[in-house]
Image (cartoon, rainbow, N blue to C red; front, side):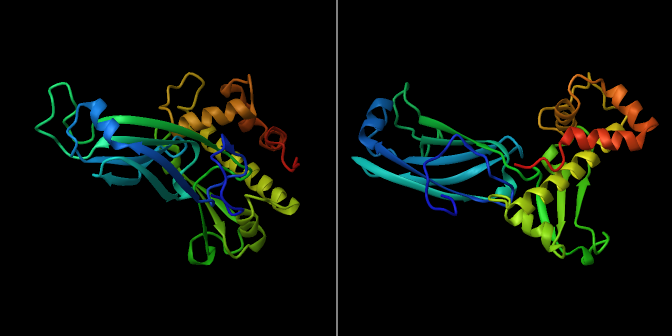
Length: 275
């Protein structure tokens, strides 16, 4: 479901951002008698239909909803749940499974007997992407923090390059700067002025991330950072911004000619090239 109404699950949401929660519904028609018979289970075996989500961008996962099924015949089960946008990112995987609800001691040797044994499963994918910088973010009053009252945003980076990206980056937006705060509120359907603001935020966030990486001597081309880590994200960013250029050359240029490098970075992020 979206703010414009209910839609079938698409392959991707091009206008998604971390401010956008997802309201999902999955309807499954379950022939309980057939499921038990084909699994060799007694006719009174309790089953559970469960949905689980996993987001590659945040490295988070969790149960969405489950429904215990004890009747016979055919049941139409509607699973409906909401996922917080701040917990998502990247590729969203939605797994639905029919499982044995509780341990059975009277099942045949060849039949499932442990609680949680999967009788049937299905996986759907949804790629999440958008115009807004893809970081966890929060809109706060900078006057209550150590940040300058009139700053529009701040990208906070913590942890080592091996730390999970989604736990290391946090984009803070100053609620007192209404132009910036409104741009993120409209990130799903940005106006021309919102696209310009988001472009500026993206360019500045890229600058902060690039400088953070270059200031770490362990950040080199042949580094073996874990998948989903801050270091791996930085390497991907460098491949996007400086394709084919060695990190050692980029680091040298940034240290010897910082003003020229700033212009190089503006060109690389294509600042203000909005559609």
